[in-house]
Length: 219
Image (cartoon, rainbow, N blue to C red):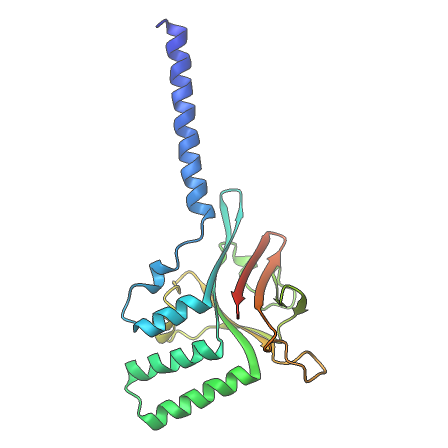
């Protein structure tokens, strides 16, 4: 094999290795991190792990290879809240009366708002605020991929209570915690936005940098 042929072979091998490396990188970045990595480990009871996995979604926004946002969201449905009460009772050794009161409070909260708990990692500090009136990110939900509903409250959670990380193990020191609340009824009506005919809901967070869509099937 002459010098030119060897040089061409070397260039081709180098290019192949580069393409392979880029392919692996793109795959690792574009694929959502397995939820089981968070929810199949740790001290939680099996029932709570299952509930957390069922009601939690992850979304990522990339610009090329740059991560613009990584967001985990748990829909605090009545089913999830009931499992949370069981887990809270277990680790805090609540009495039957205390558990009953806690469950009543959680069901009352669910009847007042449709609430989502989220943890967001957004590297660009100026964009890491979902609750500002002029925030770059806009948040809303779609019901059955049709009706659009905007939140009544987006609240940044600054509480450093360690129990948050126990119940939501996707929390890290680099993520900002949020509570996002939506109305139970369409504004000005007594019509529920989620009822027995609702098949799915989709939480959408969108802005100039990209869009995250996270869906929950209800039936």
